Amino acid sequence: MKAVICGAGIAGLALAARLSQSGWEVAVVESAPAPRSEGYMIDLFGSGYEAAARTHLLTHLQDVQYRFGGVRWLNEAGRQQAHLRWRVLESLLDGRLMTLMRGDLEQTVLKQLASSVSLRFDCSVTQVLAPVGAVEVYLSSGAVERADVLIGADGIHSRVRDLVFGDGASWFRFMGFHTAACVIDAPEIDQALDREIHIVSAPGRQVALYPLRQGSVAISFVHRAANSAPPNSSMAALEAGYGDLGWHVPDVLKRLKELPSIRYEQMGQVVMAHWCRGRIALLGDACQATTFLPGQGASLSLASAYVLGEELCTGTDVKSSLMRYEHRVRPSLIHIRRSGRRAADWLVPASNTGLVARNGLIRLAGRPGLARLLRPVVEAAREDILSIAETDRVRPSATLQ
Image: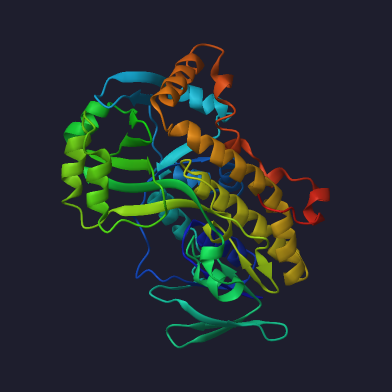
């Protein structure tokens, strides 16, 4: 059996590893010129953590994970408003929490690939045909791959999705937020963070600073926006949105100007009626983009890739295997999507009143025995895709909301 996977991100690489281990011939095509090493800080939890454990990936991630003492929420001037110890967050997720850079996770998955997997960078899909009993994938290199299955794991702007299911703009639901992420070299800021995450909050916006190794700091910006149109200049947008904040934010903005690029995105969800068509299926953000909650996309990608790999490797019919994958993952995704929309409003309140309420709840949850107050916020993170009952594996698809 042969699979062509479009996208060398977390979902595509995890699926490639699973299929190759079961004897599949796998070709992975990626439009980027080389493997990505950049990214932002994520939390691996829930079904993603379980999938990593089942595939023995957790062992390899131990060396690249980060362990923090806690999280501090500050106001615009840098005065502390709330503090939560890291062990409280771990307890909310039953101890199944691992924090790391997305690029490190992707690189670790890449290293687990068998040598038999064909990796083709700087290559994209230009056309897809579906003759009886196969899929023909036309590539920008001029090559044509004939396979038993094609998987589009090429992100929220999926080329496979556009070619097979129609214009991607039809599936994109803007969540009302813009975000940016980068890593800067700032030993003095890293020292001030003292191994804790610091989040500077103002109505409708926040800046999170994560201490890394060797004096580096990961920065994450999130702010509310009226529409999904990208700014003419990412740097200008960040200066306009965060330039009035105090503490270390001015220094951060100054250092951003020295970077070759800044990852800037409009946060949205992908809402589709179906993910499969014949021998073609979508995976990861191409069909399951949910929320900007740290790590939700990465965790969901690992879990979904595990389920899809399981179905393809144990099933006898490709089309039926793809349908079972969708039927198993979709119900949990609906719940995660709804929870994500609620959590976004709570994490980045639009008003001072909302900030006061959020910070007050965090302070209460930090007291002994009251961590459960934050369970509704992490509800989506606790969704267990991998424990769907056997009777649920063939139930009809639910309608996405």
